[in-house]
Length: 289
Image (cartoon, rainbow, N blue to C red; front, side):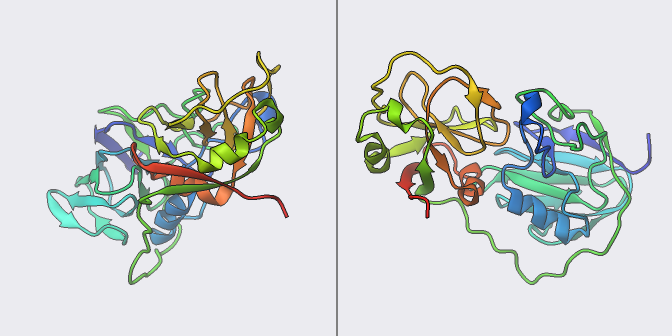
């Protein structure tokens, strides 16, 4: 094992390796995957001098702790959290130099859900279909981190960016997802899209990297049965038999038999990834131009 590596001391609730994903393989049944909050992952890479496609660590809710076997520059972004190096407070949202052998701790998210750890050189696990991302649905890529795991790191390739402050919009008090009508809106009552827009939902604790599940009123179907499996896209709002919408996120299945009433605008998905369970959720129907 190369000296450029990290060992996992505390894996946290769910910590995975993520990059920009593996688009273009849906015909093989392979989801896109990749960082759920793509802007946050891109920012920590920029702060440590990595190219945008470098792999980072994505934590969920309670952070993680790693030990660096060689000195590296790190940056933590996404959901704000306490950062410590060998027990001493370190900056969030800025490059931090960590010496060899030091313990780097990312604490629980103070707001939001997912924090991102960028390390100079990137996490250099073996790519699968052109990506190092962990895919929870298909099992491609490295498994979620466990205590004692060792991950190789790449060679640093440039200086990090200098910034005065890192913008963080914070998780929304109310998550508003803009949607365009989906291909199967006709499977629902004529006023279903209006009902979707008028209804008050909340983000369910059952949400994960595959989909954001909702709690709230059920949408009324007018056609019984299910569709033959058809292609699904990122952001699809699928409605299972219980009538409560599910927003497909990065690890979503590439096909499905439940009808899709709408599709969320791609620009809103990063915010959705940072909405904690219980966040009020509203769908805003936007017609195509």
